[in-house]
Structures are given as structure tokens and as C-alpha cells.
Length: 70
Image 1 (spheres, rainbow, N blue to C red):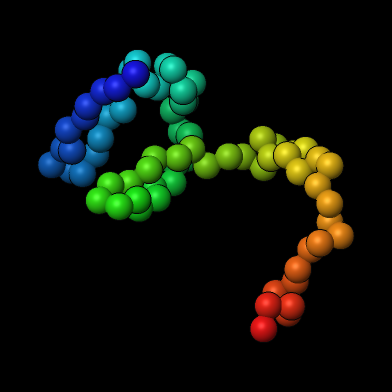
Image 2 (tube, helix red, strand yellow; image 1 turned 90 degrees about the horizontal axis):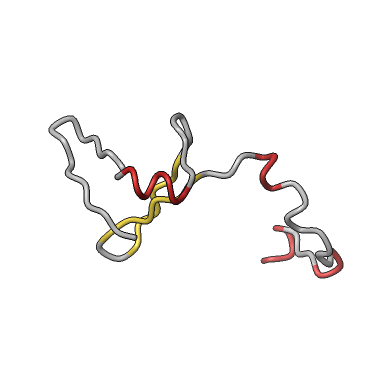
């Protein structure tokens, strides 16, 4: 899957339909731009509900607080 887009004079980019459909991206969805070398990664920002249960089974015993770093 690949596609190209052109940056408009108003600095807007339209994501190709085949990519939007494959990734199931919807209008109004929020994205983050992460600098990577000479380009950027476009990553959807997860909603809080999507993160529920993501750390199930994690061991909190080895947790370090910010105070432990210095």
C-alpha cells in the first residue's frame, strides 16, 4: 500500500483514500506528527478508551518515580 499527496498552497495534505480505508481513519480523528530523520511519521492519537487494559499483567513492582532518577 502506498500513495502520494501534494502539499497545497494552504499547507494542507489529503491522505489518499486507499490508505484511509486500509487504516480505518475517520474524519475528525486526531494525529501526531513525529520527526524522523528527514521526514515525519503520521500517527493517530489514541483515545483514552482505546488504552484501557493495555497494561494488563504489567508488574508495578519495578516502578521508578521521577524522584528516583537523580
